[in-house]
Amino acid sequence: MPYIKPETILEAKKVDLLSYLRTHEPDELVRCSGGYCTRTHDSLKISNGMWMWWSRGIGGRSALDYLVKVKGMDFTEAVQQIVGDSCLIQPVSSLPTEKEKKLLLPERNASNEKVMQYLTGRGISKEIIQDCIEAGIIYESLPHNNVVFVGKDDKGQPRYAAFRGTNASRVMGDCSGSDKHYSFRLMNPDSRSVHVFESAIDALSYATLIKLNGGDYKTESLISLAGVYSPGSDGTGKTPSSLEGLLKNNPNIEKIYLHLDNDTAGRNATRVIQNNLSHKYKIVDKPPRFGKDINDYLCHKLGIQPQRKRSYER
Image (cartoon, one colour):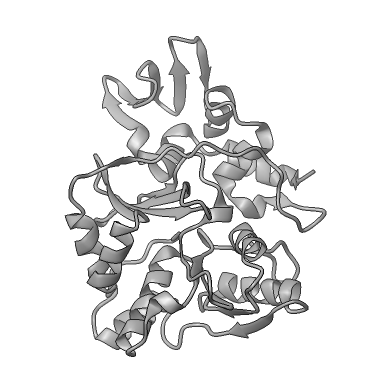
């Protein structure tokens, strides 16, 4: 069974519901008299650091209370949802056998204009964006015009989705019910290698670099780790679930290219993946040749000013 350190639980308990929803589920927030309510439960009011679901007589202070009492998550799953996968200490490196989650996708906008403007502003090829829109793995949401990155399983069913603001806000997070084993990816089932990135933006940036160099990104497999993966600095830790799930479902893969960030978290994650998987796969460490991440390098190559970065990208 996974274990969570007591100090991590205390950290999760400090997160109030309003802050959690603004980061992870902004489409759920609706302004109402005296504060906020949620789109799903209009009788659930949030005010002065507390929340109350009046129709059920249930209330609390923290996001942790909300996830357990309202969403019905077990305690461990709720802490993980708030703090991230790195909070879990696994005695054995294996895929979880948890029941399938129900993914709640934001409503689609009829137009993808703001998404196209935002992503091309970060140097990503308009043609590649359009390919992803047609494949149903990128779209613009309502009512906030966020970009949504969708991960599908081998049957083509959406199993993961992350959203992020297309303006200057720092809005971002995973959609409720997301399974990180199926994170955003661009897959060629015949490829014997996979390129690994921390965020969907970086994966799309690398696809653009392939196109700029006269190649075809569709001949490659590219996967996002669905967020910053931050193991310890001692080279030990769990393989990211997104990569672990992909390798399990694609036994033809022989080589892994790691394009993780040029920062402490990225270097530590690279060492952990190398230590965990080098006995079975050929691992190639190829961090960005300029800047913090692949998108920085793409913008540098194109001679454009990178947009202001967020602290946590998926």
